[in-house]
Image (cartoon, rainbow, N blue to C red):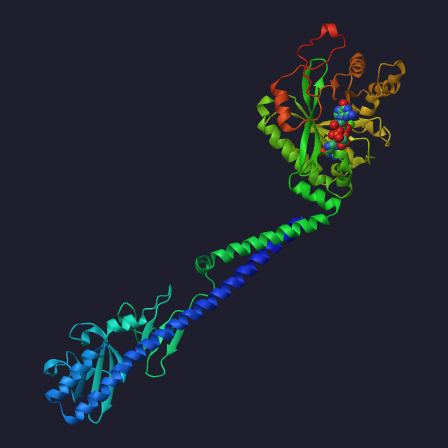
Amino acid sequence: MRNALIPLITAVLLFITGVFILNMQLWYSTRAERLEGAIYAVNNINNILDEASHATHLAIDIAGKGCDPEGQFQLGTEAALQPHLRTILIVKGREVWCSSLPGNRGLLARIPKMSAASLFLAPAEDAANEQPFLVYQTRFAASRVLVTISDQHIREALNAPLEGVIYRLRVGNNVIGLSGDIAALNASTPPSGQVNSKAYPFSIIYNQPPLFSVFRLVSLGPGILIFILFISCAAAYALVKYLNKNATPAETLRRAITNGEIVPFYQPVVNGREGTLRGVEVLARWKHPQSGYIPPVSFIPLAEKSDLIIPLTQSLMRQVVANMNAIAHMLQEGFHIGINFSASHITSPDFVAECLKFKESFNHPALNLVIEVTEREPLNVDEDLVHRLNVLHENGFVIALDDFGTGYSGLSYLHDLHIDYIKIDQSFVARVNAEQDSTRILDCVLDLARKLSLSIVAEGVETKEQLDYLNQNNITFLQGYYFYKPVNFQELIKILLSKPKVKVAVDDATREKEDVHDIVN
Ligand code: C2E
Ligand code: CA
Ligand code: CA
């Protein structure tokens, strides 16, 4: 778990840090860009107002001389030659006294009500063409000079080719933007960015970029984002490699369980009399990515020592349920499914509940679930253990005593425990060969089992001699390479589909030989 979590956390942290740095960098550069755009707009409007200031000086000169045709011509020429000016007016009292327009017209409505400020925005209704405009106003003696600038030039001056930013001209508490409408500044939401002109009483206001923006990251830094992702994954990969190099065997096994590398194999148990499959025993295999299938002797003892046997068995149980539910229609009533349980699992507090849940998970209503308890490791048979196994027995589980004859724990508990059958250890069966004496030990073991009235399954049947001997001794249920080796789920399906009859002959002449099915050879 630790080996997967640390690289994952590292990768996520690296990615977040990278994205954070990139985001801040883009934020700073976008802010700087927007400020530059605002300064550019300020300069544009300063230049326009420089024209107005120049025209004002000329108007004051003319006012001193009198508004004769020559003076009026000069005002008209100034307004025509300065690219951004619309009209130049000299107002005395409430009337236009001299103007750049023919006939000293003003083309302005409401002159008396106009602001007294030196620079102000006038709304559309103040102009004859009903367009808003900017007014540069200078007072001298009892007169004043008004220079008007059309909103179109203001809009052009504000138009910077930057995405996501809106520049507006602020004069006093009024603003005009690209749409050309004049509005009062909203006091409750002051502008996030503002640059004041040093030469004239106006500012450019604009919106600052948001501190974090996914859109900005994706549109301005897609390449760097991919690079950060790549670096994070590469770091996680390197860390996985490093941690795995130093992982303990238990950690490696824990990860294998989590990754689903411990898989069930199935070894068929054969009914020697009827020639049919009685069921299967589930045997764990480690499907190692590099080393292939690893047998359980290499990892079950480690799992038992390092408290991993319970999660390992639970993982197998889940896979067995999934496998068997997928082929439920192919399984006969009473089909046996044997699972090997270690003593530490059986004595764990949740064992009974787990087994009951396991049973409920099968779609097939009439399977025989076999709990194989090994005699190989000492089993502390106390009241609690007897009670647990008996409760499971009452709930329809079959209890089998595995590796019978090898145990150290004595046989006294057989009286208390409800054992459905025993499995004769393969080491006893393996001794049987053509020689007369070879069956002596197995004779004793079988004798003992019979005296205890126990049903018997023989394991490790490899040869014809062993099969004959077991048949002569009426041992019906058999398991061994002579019939089937443990196989994976796909192979098990093939076996079930072939509906085999197996080699069960005592007397070859009376049994079918043609239907023999042996996937071992
Ligand atoms: P077992 O429960 O006695 O399982 C039978 C073992 O005998 C299996 O070995 C099987 O492959 C092998 N076998 C079957 N027929 C023959 C045969 O004709 N000749 C020979 N030489 N061997 C045969 P496997 O699969 O290597 O399992 C070894 C042991 O590991 C099992 O012995 C069982 O005690 C343990 N084991 C396997 N899977 C699990 C598991 O899921 N949980 C626990 N707790 N133990 C397991
Ligand atoms: Ca077993
Ligand atoms: Ca066994």
